[in-house]
Image (cartoon, rainbow, N blue to C red; front, side, top):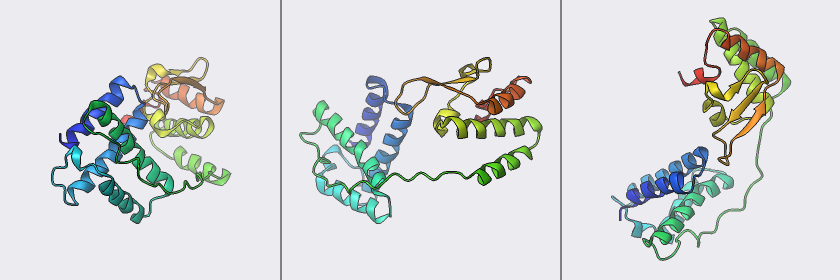
Length: 210
């Protein structure tokens, strides 16, 4: 069986049968695609499932490490391969998991940079200069919403008009990291800007897709 076909089957299983989140599936698709591309460039013209061996995966891990990736990122890259291998074992295409023998680097501490008040003010001033005014209001609403609710970029982009309730100032997030919908509430500053946009029949926040 071709590895590319196996990845396609696995991604279908992850989406339909397991119901994994959209964000998680994008990450799985990306790293499995990177593995496939690396194998094609390193002696496996059309890699088969049988080519998914521990030595091959160890060389792929060395390749990732040489690229200067953080240990946490390398963990994120190897996890989908382990999951794919487990799926192939369950399907009868593999007898054991070639990724289970890999020794992964020790996880580094998560690094999250914080935006300073001065940077926030500068961002808002820049947004206010956008034309036309409706776009300036949209940019301000987006900035305030992200800064005060902590929603992720993918969650923001996935919003639809029906997910925004301007009466109680809430957003329904349907495409979350864990795949479960939940509601967050907008601060008054963002809510006022959303109301300004919606008053002219503009799709609140969803204009991001243009």
